[in-house]
Length: 94
Image (cartoon, rainbow, N blue to C red; front, top):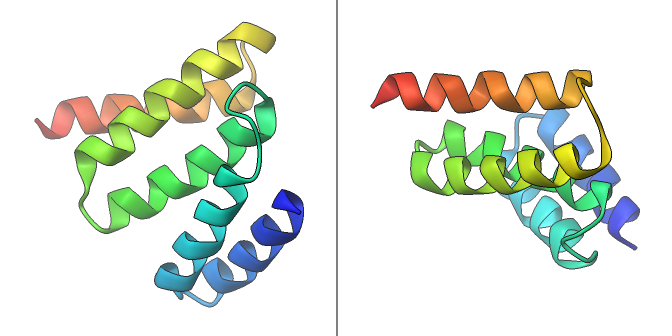
């Protein structure tokens, strides 16, 4: 079910409809346990929308959780680098 929500969210995201994209990514993130990589993927997308909405603390918190989860299962992946870049960007905003 979560993957279906994420697919719908991506469709909305490509149409620049961030409100509906956010809602469907939230459905996706709430449909999986928070200790699997899919959760980290969905959290990353939700965090990007928080950044667009200038909800920086919410984005930061989700990105930190996603990074910690990814590092439990992976080493030096592009996903980890991408999360780290966004976290650095948020830190430099403050």
